[in-house]
Amino acid sequence: MKVAKWLPSAPWSSESSNEGLGSFECPERASLTRFRQWTNVISEEAMTTERSDSLYHKWRESTEKFDYFMLGVLGALCAYLAQSYKPSQVGFNPGTLELLALLTLVLGAVTGFRRIEATNLVTRLSHQSLYANESRGAMVSVIQNGPGVNTQTGQSYTPESALQETERLSQQLRVLTQQLELVKAQALRRYHLRNSLALIGFLMLLAAKLAGAYM
Image (cartoon, rainbow, N blue to C red):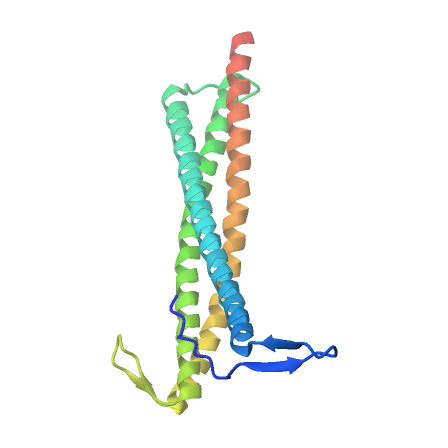
């Protein structure tokens, strides 16, 4: 972070105490102390933001790895059951339990695919929302400081056109926020459903193997 150079603007001054002893006070030093405290606060906030971003990226990376791991496990179990399954008469028997376990695990794998799809959609909507928010901030700066030019696209904005663009971006942000909350809720539901189906399918498969030893 670049900090503007601070220049003192007031001379030294002195005040007399009640006992007649001169006590000197430096306004520049007091201001410099407050300035350093202020810059320290900004530095701490920046460090906090960096730590938050770092923790978020680590959490997102671990979540994606877990999603792909669960999908791989479910796919491997489905492949194993599909290869080893031997059709039998439907009833209370190990073959029926294996069939139910296979169907449950397939549903879990499909839910896992949908979970990853929702997570990717959350990333895309978050990027669009962040871009719209940053663009709206740039338009507000044009409204306050006068005409400006987008250095990346070369498009120029007047305060009037910036005001219209700000209203459009605000409306877009409201839509994106609603979509983002909806997709986040879907991703969370699919997360719990996938884990539940995986657990139920695995227990049914285990029950089928145990029942086969006694029937």
